[in-house]
Length: 225
Length: 225
DNA sequence: CCGTTTTCTCAGGAGGATTTGAGTCTGGAT
DNA sequence: ATCCAGACTCAAATCCTCCTGAGAAAACGG
Image 1: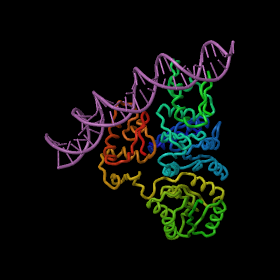
Image 2: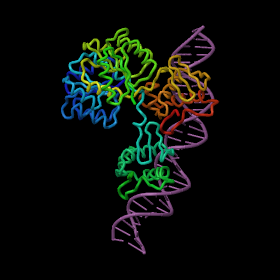
Image 3: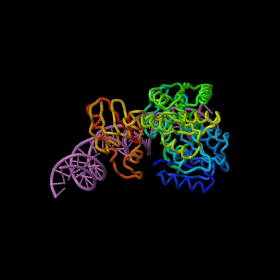
Image 4: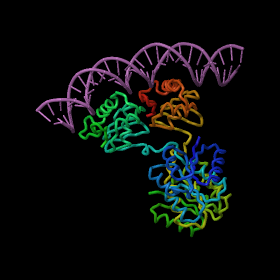
């Protein structure tokens, strides 16, 4: 089921779009302002985004730019009440893939939605799923890790832990935080699993290398730098 | 260098487009009628096609349809002098990716060209119904599979499972993901069907071959590589 | 209806992954 | 320099995933 996200502050139009798209077997989620849209579109993945230019808070152009700067690849269809060339061009240059001027015919909207979805690659690009830190590369797509080009075999937990560090480079991570993120435990247990796993990781990614990556800050936690 | 093909019978407009695009570092080839366009666009490969709707011989809509029926995936931008909704929709439904109404501003044309080119070219080509992975071939039309030229008999479920892997080569697929895609179950059942079917598949496509294709990543899932 | 094929469940066991706990080491404070 | 809480290490214990064969249940075809 293809999933479409709509950012539109005019509830009447939002409802109209939603029902028209749902009738065509799309799953639809709507938000009514730019801030909510940024949060939703950044956290959940969609096959297509429909964004109104005029919105309170964060407007469509700004939203679009933010999303693209965040390496989001989802096709974006912009809606606007103003049909001047300049606004349309600005929208496209901000990273939108198509532009529709209100008022529009539902049939044209559907045709454009179909056109945009048709050329969507079946799977997202691999590079978008890679995390880099110096000579460390972590591929969240294939779940493979390498350092200086040499593959490193990690277990599931080790992988999760390293991914956590690579998503937060140069940030000090407390044991509490690591436990919550990687082990789903928030309470205090007398365990030392984290220490042990840091040890496992170090053995696998630092052994044989001069440069250390994971550093201990006594009484604080660990940091990748 | 990105290559753009233009089909436009009005030589003045054709020249205008050509020079504007060349100024932006695209390589441009133009033809002045639908028949020539069909020949050129079928034999040479382009990154983008710009097609005028009104052309002698074969018009833009027909040309577009022919190209798409021939499994051509290149993005197509349609040009027309008529701006009625119906014509625009017909163009999009014929397989065009975008539509521009004459007269247009060059700046808007360039923005749309950029937007179309930014989208990633689909992986599928003319042999869109066949999936390849090393010496494995899966034909989604005839539902036949072979390895190293030797036919492999698969049941329906086995086929679906293998197709899923072949559409996501080198990607780690979690059991959760496989369950959703191939079995339509999203909730947690205590079943091990997936394991069993992986086993079936391995027996059929790996038996007698040195090279293993489906690899287990404990606590993560399976990967075709 | 019966036999065949396909799909799925179940249970046992091997082996790797994860966790524990105890002993050792270390860096910072006194 | 000494001390000690915190950090590290290692082996052992435990957990649990994955594989496999057997067979039940369901779907299919004649």
